[in-house]
Length: 284
Image (cartoon, rainbow, N blue to C red; front, side):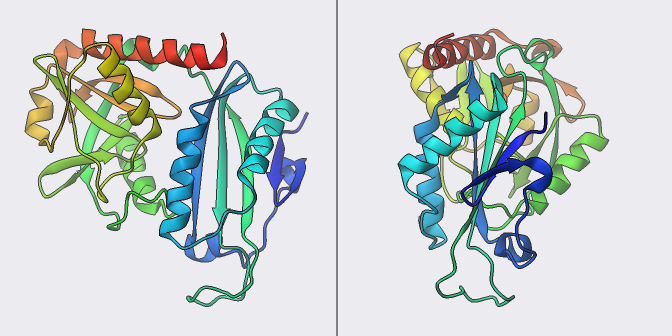
C-alpha cells in the first residue's frame, strides 16, 4: 500500500503528491519546516515544535497556512492513514507559487505539505554503539535560528561526514563548535554537560529544550557556553540531540576516541530519562 501524503488540504498517494514548479520553496528555499517524532502512534513533544514553527514563520514574515487545530488534525490523520507506530512526520510551509520574482508575491496562498517516515526511535542501535563525528567549516547563513528549508550547506556537510565514515558533522565557526548539520552538540566534562547558548547562530532544538528540563529535574548540570574542538577531543563524553535521534552518544570525533570509545554514564542517563518522558507522553 502506498504511503499517504498531505498536499494543500488533500491526502493523496505519495506518487500523486505534487506542487508547482513555480513554488517559492523550490525556486528560492522560501519556506520553513518542522519534524515531529511519533511513538506508539502518538505525537511526541508536538507543542514546542509548533511554537518554533510560529517563530520561524514570523521571522520570515509568513502567515500560518491553516489554523493550529487544523495543523494538529493533519498530523494525526497522517499517523492514522499510514498506520504509523514509530517514526517522524515532516511538514513544510512555503510562501506558495508565483512567477519567479525575488520580492514577496501579493495574495499568494502558501503551500503546506507533510509526510511520514518509519524510523526506530526508542531502540536505535546507535544508542548502544555510539556514533562518529567529524568537524567541518560552518558555511551557513547568519539566521540559523530559523528552521529554513535552505539546507544546502548542511547537506554538503552531512555528505562530507558520510564520506569519512561518520554519522554527523559538527560545524566550526571562529574556532568554536556551533552545532551538528542536523542536531545540537554537547560535551561532558567532570560530570557537567556543556553546550552552546541559544542565539541566531544555532537552532533552538525542541529535543534540547526538553532535555534541559529533564536534566534539571534529575540533578544534571548544564553549562551554556562556547567550546572548541580541542575541548571536545578532551571531553569525558559527547552526544547529540535531535527530534529523530533523541539523545545519541558520540564515541569518536575527528578520529579521536571519546571516553574510551564507549557511551558514558551521563549520556546513558540522559537518554534513559528522555525515553521515560517520551514513553509517558506516548502512553507506551
